[in-house]
Amino acid sequence: MKIIQILFLVVLIVPFIEIYLLIQVGGIIGAFPTIILVVLTALLGAGLLRQQGLATFQRFQASLAQGEVPAYEMIEGPIILLGGVLLLTPGFLTDMLGIACLIPSLRRRIAQYVLENHLIQAVGGFNQGKPDGRDVLEGEFRKEE
Image (cartoon, rainbow, N blue to C red; front, side, top):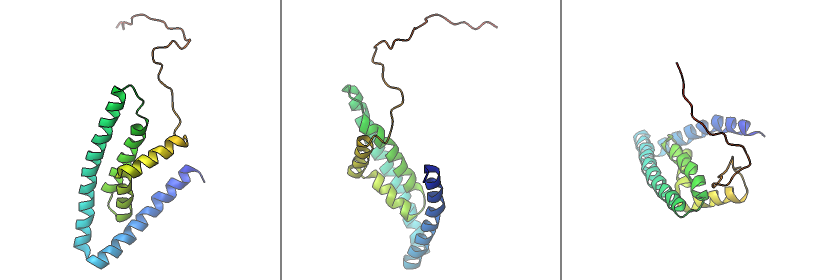
């Protein structure tokens, strides 16, 4: 199955699961408490997104300052963003997935899995000041009107 087909199925199925869960929870605790619960998880998501995002950004900067490649932080950043988006999306399934993305130990394992299995291919790279064999033409440019 292609990735587009999988994404299409997820986009199609997840709203039905969310509606079902919201109706079930609403039937157990009532409509108003369910709405409050959904709003609270959105607020919690925004706070966790900010906290975890800043912590990851600080680790990113520290790695760069030490001259290391911040590989884990570059993978964790999009995972944190996905977790925040999932928590801001109304529903209980997306909230559970969003919280899972914002748990540091679980997020670190996901990043480690991605790095170890080469799931992301590097595009380009750092030259680090070494000549790459291409000719360089230096000059000035001026646009005349």
